[in-house]
Length: 562
Image (cartoon, rainbow, N blue to C red; front, side, top):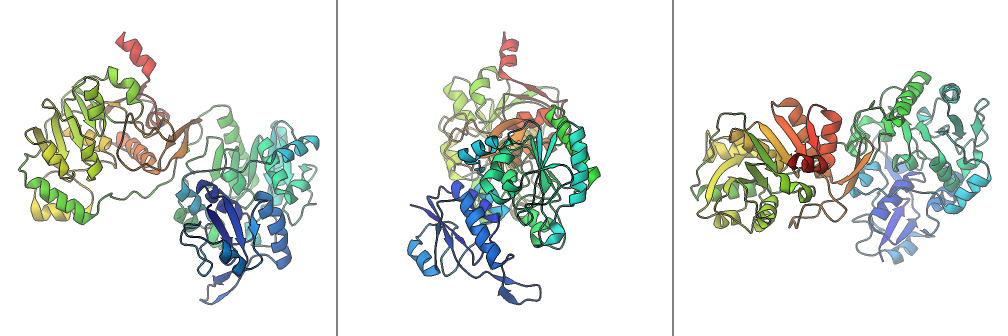
């Protein structure tokens, strides 16, 4: 039994509870416990005072209708003492205790989970919506924010009414959901659904039935933000409120002008301008073009994830020192020619493409053993990962393979590669690498590249004199939640996220998404001739961004081989 604790001592009575619930689902929590408490907030003048953004009456209403509407089985404690009897080690959020509560209701918590469990409407509410006549075609559902709480964040209602006239003229049916504070608000002669303002499950049913959902940055729109429902999310930034500032979005993993990793090309945060008629209609025109299959928006991919070195600077230095003791010769750069080399990575598509790989070839990671097991001996093998498990993956060392290894590799490699054709190179990983080389090997080559062995292997290919490359198995995506590579991999399992490219969904990870983006930057800025083979996130991104690069799928490969 794993419980999750939503504590009013640190969390609000608001739709932020929905974010918390999605985190609990990602954490496989069995029960949700709602804990009473006084929320103490630091004020701009440095003082600390009790603060909830709504009155006691509003708190009661939100608890009973919003929060229990989303999670009817939640345990609502009458006191903190009662909550203490339910607390246990390993509960969610991490490090939460009744004495020192922890909040987990902001966007950043969702990004950390890297799993999105969207809210879907209760089946009975879907039927109720249909019975009420709201299961209509081509609905553009407009969520209005019009409250006394932080009113500068409110919708510009007159602009939305004007936009609704335009929407109607363009074949969609505008339907307004009023603010919960004003369920009877009118919006010209346009349709309005007061019931959806008061019943969160009915609201979800209407969102799910919509062709597109529209609205400003507010609580209810979060139900669409964390889903795959078509949506335009306007005015994410309203200055003067910490939760609507650029710094807040950036801190929580969505830098300005980026899009969340789970978005499709029919979902968009509109960073530019306000919710004014001209911008609303402009973005809707773009959305309608995207719906028609036209490529009018940049790719929806993950924002910048922080990627850190897997071994600290001292550990890397120690391993480089150990490598140098063996006296391996260092690689020397050769002039570029017109020959083509194949760089073979260990992504799942290698299972389909390995028969078609052209020589000469450079393997990385588990692709070395994968090919040798199938009777294909690589010409070169490159590795640069400092972790021990990478050495344990190299079980079929072969006399005909030339090993071009980074000095930072784990010392187990050097025993495995004794009496083999080994040359080494220094992997540049930042200022700490420069410091070590200045002290221990001044003047030596420093090889840069991206965050993966595949990208570093491209740099090694350049050292070997190649600038024309065939890339196999460089997928940056997984076959499924459990199958991440072409074969067994001894490394730590990565968190899986879904990412969309031109309407196709791929399973990937924050690290792999970053690597795919690094590769796009690389081939945009370097004089290389690249052909991708196989199917994956990286290949999909190349097709999207760089039409001049070729991507050859397995069927084409079979035709060429025939």
